[in-house]
Amino acid sequence: MLDGARRAARAALEAWRRADSARHMRHSAPHVTRAGLAAGLARLGIAHGDTLFVHSSLKSLGYVEGGAATVVHALQDAVGPQGTLLLPTYYLPGGTVRATCEMKDYVFDPHRHGTHMGRLPEAFLASGNIHRSIHPTHSVSAWGRHAADLTEAHHRSPSIFGMGSPWQRFIGCDQAKVLGLGISMGPVTFYHALEDAMGDAFPVPVWEDATRLLACLDHAGRRWEVPVRPFDPAIAQRRIDHPGRGDLRDYFAREFDAAGLRVNGQVGDAASWAIPAQAFFEHLGRLASEHVTIYASAAQLAARPIS
Image (cartoon, rainbow, N blue to C red; front, side, top):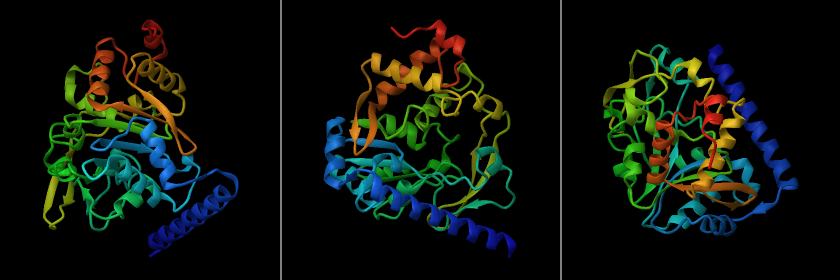
């Protein structure tokens, strides 16, 4: 009973914070419309038929009239009826992969569990015609032409980001692009696809040794045991999304700009970017062969100056 009261109190506090933030944004930030967002996406090179993996920060866009649902509609407008959208709708009740693996009696249920990834993924899940992959920590949701193919059988993949996962399938799609909507080059889960693809050849040992089996229910209520291998917490402290790794985020931004792969532009009030997925993946592989990864030290970055 006490745990339930605590959850209710946290939910009420979060609702109040969101409402207060929305009031502040409404009065202080530029107002952004669905058409304005779609126009900004078009200037980034987003076109009908594209398949987008969207990493986003809703608050960076400014005050969006209609909120997160408007952003979802604008993304759909941008890719059109033949396009596809993928958003991370991860559910991590433990806060991290490792802590979630250690939870007793945890069973992921797509009918009951939402996402911890923020308001835009929440709105996407609620928007209708969504396909959601079955995974205990890294469920991905999709809308559009390739949605079913990209999300099916994730629970049968040998690892979170490995063969058969939405990331590996996404890389092979025509017109596939990674979209950073109001974010830096830091919080981009797409990076991990290379780690799983390279396995032991990846130059940094990012995973713990033990693989855990976590329970999931599929959409028909069948139970599956899904392999999950946590990140090594010591290595994760060096990663590009860690608050102290501004040097690494800046390096990757300049590197992908210098390589001519990143298209930069403004969407709403947010600095945003897009990179073709196949080229992104291949360039990450070339960097890894030169010992530059999303875990690289300052010395490793200095040893490979950006040309």
